[in-house]
Length: 220
Image (cartoon, rainbow, N blue to C red; front, side, top):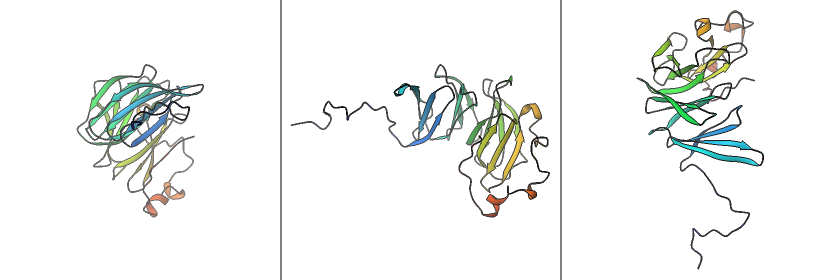
């Protein structure tokens, strides 16, 4: 009689470090790490090696579902946000949590909005209940540096940062797409970057016209 948990010794069977719940996010960093997050608030770090990936560390990061998992453009810092109104900051290279930010709102998504030469690792966090985007120093004391209140009227569910032009692209649930820059440019519209004076001259209103909710956004 073979017990159900007595797996045969064969090359077809491998040790698994799977999550216990459905995966909600998977990202890969420039520092050769893969980070996975599951619906139950767990985060796992994996290191790329020559013949595959190797499990590194496991965090019970949040007690409620994770709403976003993002890494900066250098691949050195990682953040998670959750329905528990908190943001956790991780140092990817040493796979350790280095800061925690308590929020007075439920975060919908996050985006690192700084490049390698910036002195402050700014993190943008959108509010799930309105169009506000709060800016934090990820390594600071958790105080809000700036709040962007007038750009979006609906909750922002997607953000992406272009480090070459130091510009953030954000899209809200109404399909409205906006461009703005970081703290070095006072969070203003990047007039010198874009090649148009009015969005009416572009196709940026197509999502809103078709009542389409954007679910993903990447920058080359």
